Image (cartoon, rainbow, N blue to C red; front, side, top):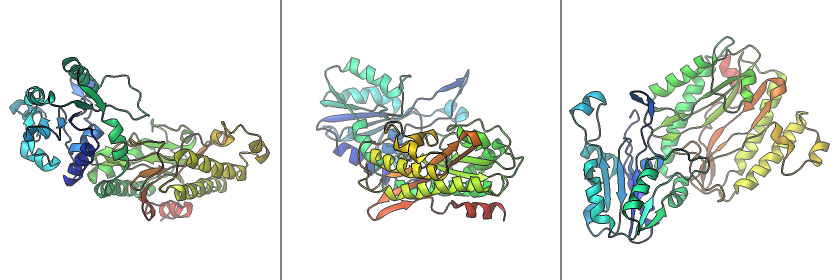
Length: 429
């Protein structure tokens, strides 16, 4: 891992909070993510299962966690299983956790090698009434490939059919949405790295620069600051490309007079930043570009004020939609008489602003949370309004990451240039 060591207090507290919500006489099993083949003899870069990392801090494949707080044998109340290294693995793959390193990283005392898993599990599982299984219940996920938790659940159910099986995701959905102080600090680090990358490209962009060159500058800054890399595939969309919401080709040349839309964020210690900015390629917005930019910025500022404990997501999006409608009328993109007659289920503003304004942020960019619960203290949410005018080859999106606290919200990206004048000043300095 490139990132600096994390206090295991984070993972110890997460495990305590999880087991407090389980039923009596329950055993929970969590698995590291699969490795996915890339071609004949290569795998894609390993990315740890977010729930497994949340509970262990272990960033290594082929790992298993058992939590059994009522276990009659105290050795197995918390058990971590790791792949045992050997000379071949050391030569071809490099260093793997020692037991002592895993204890330090996770705060778990009882560490065993993976070849002991089946034996230990069998000696304790029949004393438990309930078995908690972890599944991916993020409502943005579409299940098509049987991942490791699902495959091993099928094996468990076949071997122990009379146990009662429970869902860990129901608990983790509530826990992961509330960020601890340590999680906030890791997210702040990701945001700071993202800021530095944006400042770097502000002084780099000019007519004739290719989108992939901008992506390279961002990647360079991420890696020299110990980020794992990009939180998601970066969007470097100049001109009309900005009207493709998930444009990731990044293969066009930035032209004089165009606006370039950036949507990128650093991943640090598996925690993510998510930022959007729109800048003039030549360093100066035209009046029309500036008018659209300022309209988006006003909606962003208005929406940010609504991100507070107690706000309901559906109500929030409706209010933001009303703000956006007013701005689009002001830009003469909508007519107020047409708006008065619109179908409330299909508001006209969605022609120019077709995505949501906010989502939870954390170990996943679209983090695991209950979208039907009111916002709570400890939530981190994005705020990302945009206006996309295909007929003008112009797309503007602005996005910051907002932490809700008991005293109000805190913009974790408040130090990243946002005002149009500030953007122009830096680009022309």
